Image 1 (tube, rainbow, N blue to C red):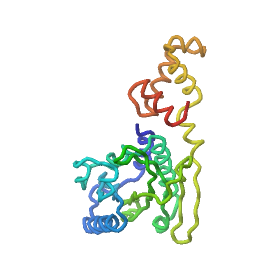
Image 2 (image 1 turned 180 degrees about the vertical axis):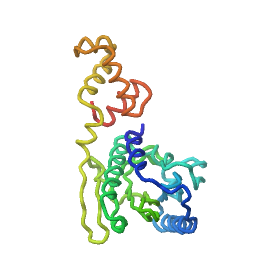
Image 3 (image 1 turned 135 degrees about the horizontal axis):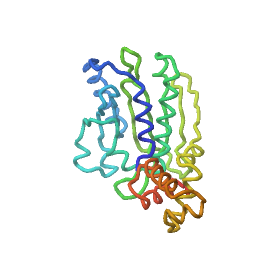
Amino acid sequence: MDVLKAELEKAFSIQKFDRNFSDTKTVRECRNLIQSLTEVNNGCAVLSDLAAGRSYFSIGSFGEYLGLSQKDLSQEIIESLDEDCIYQHIHPEDLVDKRMLELKFFTFLCSLPIQDRSKYRSNCRIRMLNNKGTFSYISNRTHILRNDPCGNMWLALCQYDISPDQAERVGINSQIINTETGEVTPLFLNEERMSIISEREKSILQLIKEGYLSKEIARELNISVNTVNRHRQNILQKLCVKNSLEAIRAAEIMKLL
């Protein structure tokens, strides 16, 4: 369940990269950087090449802490911008908020002069499933390392390591930080998360949970069966699930019902 993934991909697509653009030297330098970072903090670092749609991993001992498979531990390059081996360990509710933070951060960076983008990073604290089968709090930071010659955001760094703060709190403490001035801008995402599906869609999903069929929902809400079915399909798409049972579970996890 990776809600908002499509929205984020849509946002990234506004950047128009030169298909002939290539700078292997800079990529190699940044890959060396992420390897050094993981050696120092025992975390995980992911370098995303937005131009190539490719991600470079340096997982280190953090992968063992999460209980990643040997296949995941050994991977260094994937032809995707998604960190699936990492994301599948994030609590579903926190993954939604992390996606919203990524979207807000990207939109914010787009509004800045190109030379100012590297001054900012996003920060949050998320729950991730560890090798003991319980959730731990993990610090997550993202910032842009390089822009391409056309001014597109090109190389992005995402870091994960164990948070020194393991106290249980609501939300992921989303922030955008100016690394030069120390100014912190908190982001409150609960209202936006609640609006992922509409109030009408919540009503329909609640009735589905109670065992109502589409024709019964239509009668209860005084709408047509076609309208009910259209809402049902929209719910599945918005929650990135395959069926109504998965939709109910996802909505409950995200506290939408």
